Length: 228
Image (cartoon, rainbow, N blue to C red; front, side, top):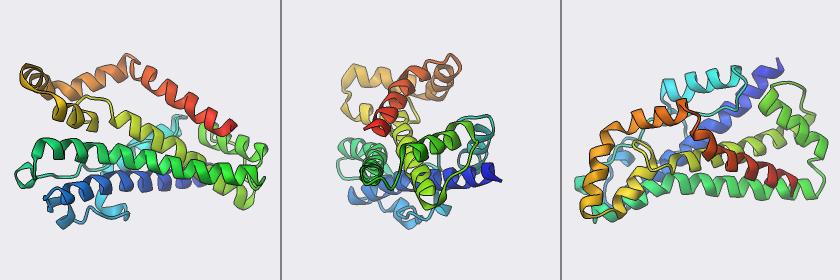
């Protein structure tokens, strides 16, 4: 029963976080003149328009029951580049909006968490129980403080991972749109030649555990935040 509760909390946090992420993309695209995503109902924190069955439901389920934290993605926001004012600049801002929104969410969750910790509403024992629920999927959460602790800790971790992962400059991740906006001439042409193979490169990074070197500092930062 506890496992089901832990999963519901974490999937709810994930769906909220990807909704923030995709809404930020859609909002920024609209600001630069493309209302496509807005007309598709993507500027919303309602997760339903953002859900991708595989990345928003199946992958998080697999990760959770294989012992990892819940992680996933959403349907990409559609952007019509022909509608954009200054498309090159717009691409940088639209791409960066998602990760920045996740960093902001993680920051707000961190502030709330630290305030509750300093006022002893969330204790060290409660934090340890929340970490067990997050990583080991065992134990119990004592009352409101336990639930808040798990929600805030999940918000911090999931949003940090979403932000940093999406900043990797490999298509189709947001980092590719940012770096593409800055590249010029031969460097841009070279990058565009590599772009069609982005997903294969990303899978290779995951398969050979290179992605772990990127996530390792995030996990360290996460535990530093909890120990403040």
